[in-house]
Image 1 (spheres, rainbow, N blue to C red):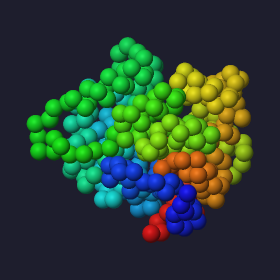
Image 2: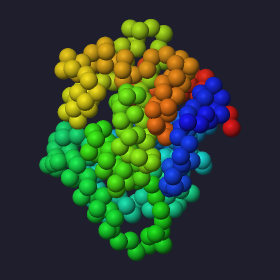
Image 3: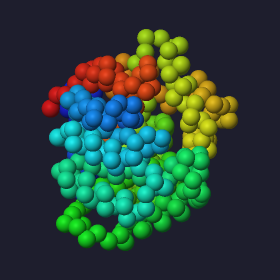
Image 4: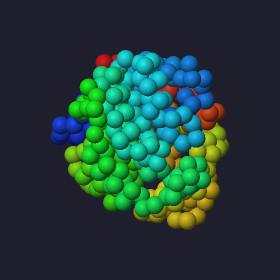
Length: 320
């Protein structure tokens, strides 16, 4: 393992650095932000959230696609407002567009914005596919494999047709992690513990491994638990996450709606920048290449400006 000089964060990452798209390789050993709160800001101000995250010293902004803005339109707004920040979809829902549209959009975005775009793809969840989009949710593994295969075959008659771009997939279980190693540049994990990161690294080999980590800066445990339970409320209703937690050793009583106190403590870090930095270090030591922090502020629909700043300052992220 190699220590990286990122001020108080003292981050760790793998010494072995395989060739991969530049939009991923420069993220190794760095900390990003995962948020969807820019969807609650007016479109003209949308990119300002990314500009703030960039100015604070975070290396990347990862964001979801569910009931909010279309992800590739969003990425364009965010990239346009920044100059060094990597913008990554975490994830773009594969049911929202066909494979040709996805791969060609990724090529264009990466060519236009100096290789700062990462296409993160995911199969999403049955309620978001069946009810929201009107599709029929099918085998996640087979569907993702078919989609990646179609992307690889997709034609493009435009100048950037051969433009390289980074493609990662959301993965929790062993088979999807292995697919990420086989057919993508890496994977994004979500709502996992450090032990899961060890397992994920063993399965993805030298491919890129990004870990999402939820965190809360709050003055009391009561407030921490209120935010953590509210955060887990939606996810505990989704079978993909319940299956993942079962593999991690959690019991049905842990993933009741909103999650048990035990699950809150395992999935969400409560503390200041020093405590958060320690969990980041733990993920790096376990094999993560990059960690993106989902900061659960007092208002889940508002950008966590103050908390983003406190973490960045406490971890000296703005230092070279």
